[in-house]
Image (cartoon, rainbow, N blue to C red):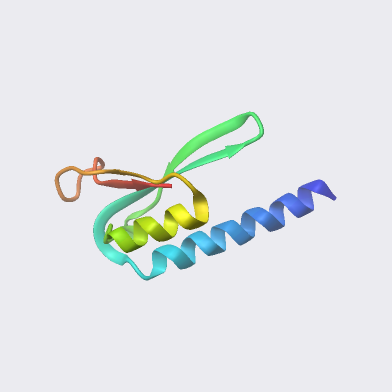
Length: 85
């Protein structure tokens, strides 16, 4: 029962995350996602199709829905240009 409810919540959050990024797709900023579950954690760097225009509006939406967002700037196309949620 718990795993099923947990999976439903994860799916809901992933759908919400994708919907939030959808309006900003097509930019040069890579997106990394920090995932934590119980004792496990990791960082996923999303593929090029998820690169975004890192606007203030996007960052505000991500913070409102998911909490802390970190933005690191670097040369265009480098892995240091990352929005991390």
